[in-house]
Length: 467
View (cartoon, one colour):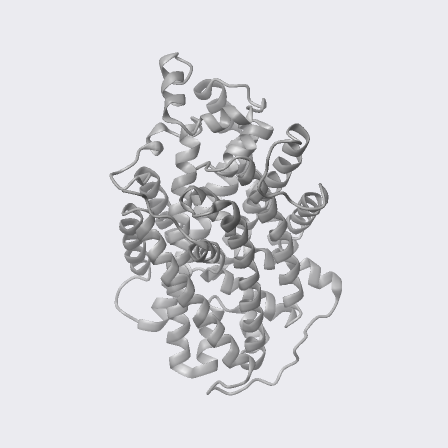
């Protein structure tokens, strides 16, 4: 029986699914509440920076298609195992699980604000995580059905709520306040670090590209369309915020989407935005569990993670990864539970890790352009090395301006550096004694591609190279 494939609609829904998340609504509220509607300019800049990353990842996927580890395999072929483990375990696995846990915490807080049931808010997180765990164990078809329905319902609800607010059609009292709090270009540019979080995660399509129809066209096109759609939808919401939500309250709220919904349509609006928050959590966590389990599977094939992550269930799902990611999400959700300060801090820490992985994606493109200039690519980043270099420079700038508060910025950078140092020590010993490979020596592309086959691992184990 032929396996079902995902179409362009599903690619867009996966791209949108992780990007439009509850924490993005928090970042959107904080950014708009700080400088007003000019935050849209910061959003456009951040969106363009992220599009350069999507372009780089699309070229890498075109050169090395159907790789389950995605960025892990690209970086292994370019820079060697040490940078690969640092970027993937820190920049992807740790960061994504952390952000998904924060998403779940925000959702649980919103549910507690709405229903006031005599149960801990964390119970809502457990319920959703268990449902998505079971759904993802059913395979890619069930994953796609959930993703398509949830992503388009979520985007549609956000568009309707945004348009109602932008046109002043809400039942609540309109707020009289300036549209612009800061028009200073330096301030706007510095807010791109906050806006960056609004556009991360579209590349989650890459690990499932083997399940996509006409992947050469649909994978890059779906990611670009997804980012463009998100930018438009969130810009509309900013104008709605201006008409119905005081900027200062918006910036300080742990759940700005609930505040906006209540001010716009009263109790109905609050419940509606809670529904949007639930859709956002389901969409982002569904994408995270599916994508990260595939990435763990790909890294296990390269002996960069325990071999158990390669195991598949009867639905061809890497079930160990699905369980592992789901449990870690619950752990981080519990840590950040009911704390708006912890939520905001973890979002920014997660941004730093994600930005580092994006820098590696651009470097990979530049290295492979130099090393394999004539290799066939169905997609190639235009203008030579210009866009990858712009992406690297812009991402470094955003890391340096991760917070407008110097104390918080130093704390974020210190924690990030400490985690990367610990990962560096772990990676060095794992590579030397478990993988038995040179720490910084790159692996030929054809060898990395061969690692996708189960026989590669079997042969190396028989020869005593990998244990």
